[in-house]
Every structure is written in structure tokens, then in C-alpha cells.
Image (cartoon, rainbow, N blue to C red; front, side, top):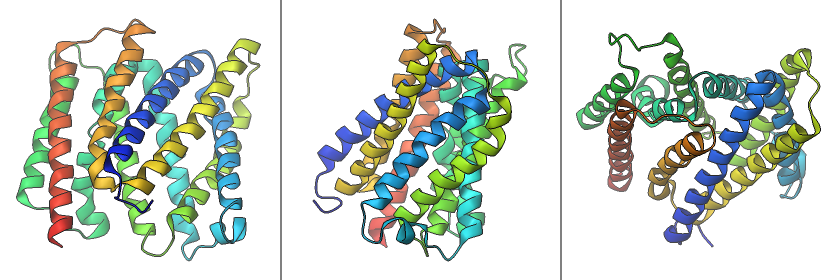
Length: 292
């Protein structure tokens, strides 16, 4: 089915992806609380690289075609940027928990909009700048600077959001010359090489039970990427992207029910403001796309 022909299915796939990724975040929090973050992410990337190579080998041209790029330095930098972001975010899970980490991380679409000018040369109008400003008021409500409960650790998921936004913008930039399949291939393979170079020095023995959780982490990662790919195959990205915010809801549920985290009023209020501003930003981008 051609892209954009089944929005309802695309929405269902995006919600399914959000559920899978929320489960993945919960497992990541458990494992990173018991073992070194670098080792956990390294093993996860081994499986991810195998998944990427399997997908690429089944397409026309195989691995050679998927690896062909006119901008290898950019693709490699993107991949290394993503593994850095993942390590930062997983560390945030263990320090702040899933609820607060995801509440702050939710601002990344606003960062994408703010950085699209200097990185991609796109014009950002006053409406989107207003939405960006409102969204960051939501971030400040979550962080509560000056109220005595503010911790410098609360900036960790904000750093992760910045790195992920930059990764997304560089992915758009790379798409001007490379296919999505090529970017996906470089993300998995170079990311696995980069994480292995770091993570192998932090290897720790793992219990058989936690190896089971690690296997489930790898499976959820591959499953989430598969459903996300299918989502964008059947529906326009601008139509389904707002439903990615469900990951905040599902991850918060895991944090509350599994890890006994507490839901603070400022986190709920701040996250609501960020999500509203983010959805408005996505809507404006869709309107601009239709006008163009």
C-alpha cells in the first residue's frame, strides 16, 4: 500500500510502537540499574545491527547498496550521535526514573523546530517560535528551578532531547542525498561498532534471568523499529507523529506500576504543556507542507 493511503492503520502502528518502546525503556531501566549502561546499550546494538543488516540484505542491491553513500562522515556522525543520546537517556532512567525523564524528553520536537533554522536553513515563523517558548515554560515547570527540589540531574533528559533533535535534523539533511534505507543501515552498523569500542571495557557477568531480560530488550528494539517502519510506509509522518506522545503515557505507566515512581503535579502540568505545544508545532509543519 502506498504511503499515506491508510492513516488509521498508521496511527494504530504508531501506538503499538509507543507501547513497545515504553516496555523497552522499562527493561533498560532495570538492566542499567544492575549493570553498566555502556554494556547494556552495546549488547542491544549488536542485535540492532544484525536486524538492520538482515533488512538490508533482503532489499534490491543487498548490503552493498544499503552501505553506499555520498556522505560517509555525516552518516557516521549521526550514528555516533544516536548511541550517545541513548546512553544519556538510559542513564537518566536510572537517576530520575521513567516518568520525569520522559516528561522532559518530550520537548524534543520543539528543539527540532528551533534548530531547523540554523541546521537546515528552514524558516521558523512566529507561531512556531511562540509554541517553542510555551513548550519550554512546560520544561521549567517540570524542573522547578529555584524551588529547592531542583536537581542538576534533571538536565540529563534535556541533554538527551537535544541530542535526539540534532540526530533527527541530521537525518533530514542526509536524506537529501541518501535513501532512508542507507541512513538506517549506517545507524545500526556504525552504532554497533562505536558502542563495542566503548562497552567492551565495561563488561560485567550477568545472571541468567537478566540475560532473559536482555534478550527481551533486543527483541522489543527490533520489533519497535519494524512497526515504526511499517507505520511510515502506510501513512504520512505528519499524520501519525502526534500519536508518538503516547510513549510518555505508557512509559509513565511502567514507572508508576513497576518501579513505584511518584507522579508529581508539576510533571503532569509541564508535560501537558509540552505535548500541546509539540502537537501545535507538528500541525503547523503539516499545514506548511500542504501549502508548499
